[in-house]
Image (cartoon, rainbow, N blue to C red; front, side, top):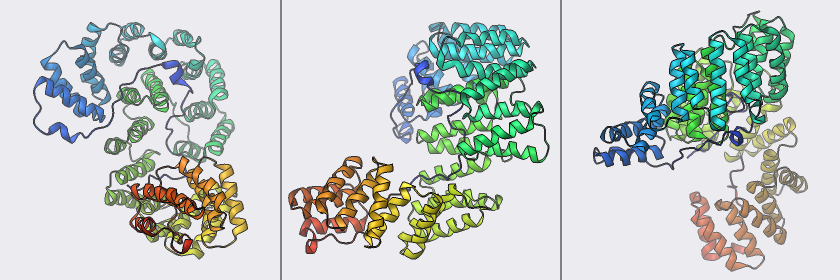
Length: 585
């Protein structure tokens, strides 16, 4: 499998939305299962009640939620009063985004468990969408037990009052969260949005300022506060907070899009124009926090409920796809990314992520086709070219990759410090393609942009040691890299190998033993330690270490070298030159 790569511009909000440490306050149980092949579900025609149940569990372990929901639904028809099957079917319908089916099941769930939180949330949302706000609140009150129930119920209750135009009651509902410190940002942020919607400008301004002071690094808080300022004549202050975010967190296409409005003198629409979109914002924040705290299954459920309330919500779409990516469900992620509209500022990133997911699925040609379309459609953007280069480099197509890195650099209007990665990765490609002169120049350029970047210090220092060139400076650079990243096994290996090349074998053993502790599965690092053991007379341990290296499935040329050592030891009592260093990129 090729390495997974990204580019150096933070595109998706991912998880840093409106709060930190939610998991400590939520305490929600997750339905996590280990992955298993879904293809087995359709072998053998499992249509008996027990067969459907087992097939559903098998699909559930792989988080193939749509397939699992189908099998559980069949099992439920055979055993309609089974509470375990009923609840699992309900959860799987939610996870699959089939809210209509989940709503029907929710009525049955609460007949068996009157206080079931998710069932109450789903039924409340059904009433909310039909503007029966009082009925919605009854459901949410019944499910408002435990931390997650209190948080979800309070936020949605507040938005139901906002839907009735009662800003005061909405803000009062949020006060139920005041007793839990971790919920403070939710209370303040949604209070600001509600006051803004209710045209209580003094309260909105007060709460937006508090939210920004509390969570100024949150993309959504920055967007909402800046949007409020723009609509209320404070253009320069809005521009200042956008630029502060960009400086601290790197560029983001949603912020870039807003900054273009300044150039065109456009007045933005409110970020939350009605109560239903406000409720979607609340669920989105919860989904983001759950994803951050590894509540994968419930993060998916809250994302699906968000998109049911607000289908045209690109940032929520990308969050859902991102959750699937983290769960290594790349096929599902690809399908979700298709829902990002072409006119969205997030479309380019969705296509890039699609290509990366296709690459992870070993569908290289489809990944390349996706990126080639994007390269043509975005002639001024360097990111698609950079991503193509990263994917090709991951497949050891170093000459082709270096060409794409060069094309990416040609599209940059200005080279800045954050573009050090382009030179670094292109340098790796040149080095692997045996063009050291160009490689060295790129590594030096990367260091000029980021003087203490440990990856570059390590790679260049290691290469110089291998070539017996600039040894004093090489050792200094590698030691600096180890100082900056003391728990990086690849970098510690570089220091150990540098000592080995300088015939400082005792020091080499010390560092290489540490490197193997940090990266016990890497064949080349194990080989290095075996070489060092041999040189200090520990020949039995050397062969043991080379055996480890052999068993970790090294590349063919590395395996050939290791086999020679196992048979003959180090030829001429010295290690052969090892041009294929561990992948330290």
